[in-house]
Each structure stands twice: as C-alpha cells, then as structure tokens.
Image (cartoon, rainbow, N blue to C red; front, side, top):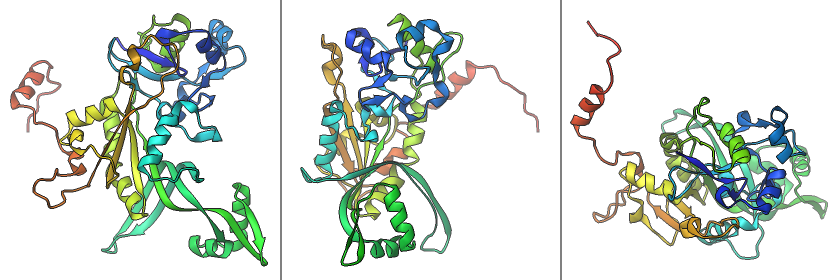
Length: 369
C-alpha cells in the first residue's frame, strides 16, 4: 500500500523534533515559505477547526494546504515526488539551500555566468493569435513554469517600440512591478529590463490517483492521518498516465519555442519518471545522455541511496542526468530518431492480450445493426 514518504519536507519514517516544529508552521523547507500545496491543490485544503487533534499540532493556523511532497508506493522502493516545489521553487525571493544542487546544475547546463544577476518569473502565460506560413490562423496558449533571463539597461522608448505600448504605460507598468527606472540626459531608462539568454524551465512531477474516501486514501485524508498516526496511514497511488499526457502534450512545443527565442527549454523531472518514459514509449532516454543542451532537454534528479541512510535530515536531490537530443532524426543513419519518439508506443501488446482483457469483463450491450 502506498505511503507518504515526505510530509512538509521531512521523512515520515525519521520524524523528529525539527520535523514537528516545521509541521507546527505548515512550512515548506524547499520554498522556505508556508506550504502552498504545490500550487494546484487548493481544493484539498485542510480546515483545522474540523479536527481539534490536528489543530493542537498546528495551533496558529486555521487552514493548511496538503503538505505531501512524495509517496512511496512500495516499501524500499524509490519515492515518487508529487509536488513540483520538491524539485524546484524559485518563488518568494528566498532560494532554499535545500535546492542549491538543482540550481547549480541548471546554471551549468544553461551556461549562466557565475556571479551575474538573472531574473526569474513564474507562471508566465502567453495566449496570442498567430498566423503560420500558410496564412492559417493559429492560437498559442501555454503557461511556462519559470522563465529565466539576463538583464540589460534599455531606453523606455525602445521598450515601448518593442512591445507596442505607449511610453507612459511602460513607465507605470515598470514602476508597479519593481523595475529600476532612471533619467539620463532627460531620457527614461529601465536599468534591469529582461534580455537574452532566455531559459524556460518546466517542472514535471507525478500526479496522484484520486484515492478512495472510504479507505481514506484521498490526498487530504492521507495527509491528516499521516500527521496524527505517522506511518499508520494509507495514501493514494501514482497516476502515471496523467503525468505522461501532460508532459507529452507540451514537450515538443515548449522546446521549439525556447529555440525560436534563441534560448533553450529544460524539463526538470525525477529519475523514476524518466525511467517510466523510457519503458512506456519508443524513446530510450539512456541513448541521449549528454553534457550539453540540445533541442529537447530533460534534466532528471533522484534520491539515490539517501533513502536508505540512517539520517533524520532533509534529503537534498543531488544525483542528476541530462538527456538531450534533436526533436527529429538528424539524417545520420546511425543517429537515434529523436525526441519525437516520445509520442510513439514503446512496444505493441500481442493480440491475445485483448482477448484476455475482454474475457475478464462482462459485455455492456449486444450490438445489432
């Protein structure tokens, strides 16, 4: 049965006084801020007034977000990260020491200069109407997890011409968003306007199955039981197909956009998810191990042997591998086909499998034409 492995950052099987103090604030050590449930679990928020025992453990809060970082589907196996903040969080302006290794690897592969300042934005949405080379109307409607850019000094008039807005609106918008403005020779400048290089960072973690209310395997119930009972709880499983559907629908598109903007897109995943991709599609990621970015880039991190260590401290993800390659075949007969294989089936099931599956289910109707 699936169990919560990390609760508000700390291992549930190594719970200690530091973990308890952290729980009392519903704190995420990877964000260095109060847990936000990963940004997409607000419907699963826990109302503490409904349970006095929970309220006693977290006395200064009325509502908390579900603090499940990872699940272990079987004892002794690698946990599955289910919260994107566990892999990477750049929000809030406080960069946690617990993600220093992840940021270092991202900086290394993105060729960012040590000591130089870069800006990061989160949840950057672009929805715009476009026309392709055949004069067909198209929509681009995507949200980027993070966009990382350089910084340059730029005249407000240049910015106005670049984005198609009047200078007075540029000035007001820049002031509202904390940019540094200065007048030089009677001309307005933005001293920290975003510039190349552009790096898009997409964080893809596993989804949980819906769970069962009667068995208390819904994510909020599992969190409550883990707080009160420790390891004596049940948790939801991993929804592999949903993870895959979300990633495959965006992988090529966002990679193409990064290249079109003169930058790169890096997909940040866990190593067990990378293994699942290799086993379930025609793409064998081990064939794309690289030291340099390419058209499509997947940077995988894992716990390694740290889950077996007799250590109560938080686990920093340090073990990493970069898988990078072209979108399509390069023309080299000895080259791998490219990341387009990610949408292909890994292996065809034999026809006998469908007969076996049908035998094990009653028909729902008799069809007559």
